[in-house]
Amino acid sequence: MSEYFSNIKTGATTIATGMGITLKHFFNAIKRKGDTGIDDADYFRQVDGLCTLQYPKEAIPTPPHGRYRLYVNIDDCIGCCQCERACPVECITIETIKTTADDLAVCGKTSGGQQKRMWVPVFDIDTAKCMTCGICQSVCPTDCIYHTPVADFSEFNVKNMLYHFGNLSKIEAEAKKKKLAEQQAQAAKEKAAAGAAGAPAAKPAPKPAPKPAPQQKEGEA
Ligand code: SF4
Ligand code: SF4
Image (cartoon, rainbow, N blue to C red):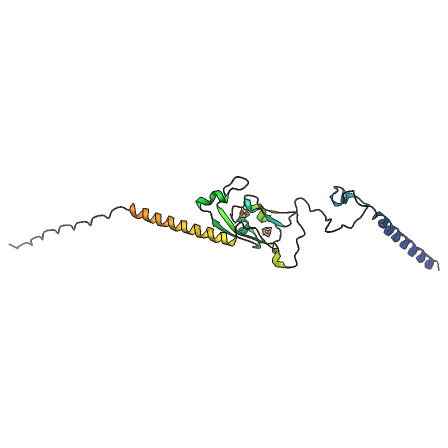
């Protein structure tokens, strides 16, 4: 009989303790964590206050060195394709066109002062495949491909996960290709002409050696 009343007492105590914790959080939730919400530096150190974030108005901040969505500052890209070669899942696709000499100034320089010698009409990253390993970022000589703090970039259509960063339209790329091909053809023609003009004159054919006089055999008069 005493065990029966002991169990009732334990049950009532457990319910009261649980309800006490629930009510404590209920009343604490009336307060906010910090005056500026998620932007408060001590937001996550505070015990009391609202726990639920008003997403997407509020979001958990990403760590400063976190690797999230990739971005390419195409103005600093020299088209070396090292990132494309290094990517272990082949989610980077780059196409380049060599810049002609008269286009170098238009092609411009990187923010570090390096002359760019390649147009980059296609620079696509399939972020649906990207595993955010960071290798592309580490091999880039101009630090122009990097991870951003953007963590939420989900899409309903997977095709929208393909990001384009190229710096020429299709029409512009065709014009640059044509111009380069014409200049290369002209240069090859001039080289061939210069080679023909500077070629040494043909050597005169060597004279045939005189035949030795036939020797007289012994006994012949
Ligand atoms: S982070 Fe890794 S997987 Fe993603 S594009 Fe760069 S190298 Fe490829
Ligand atoms: S490694 Fe950097 S500079 Fe080279 S193609 Fe990739 S993004 Fe451009």
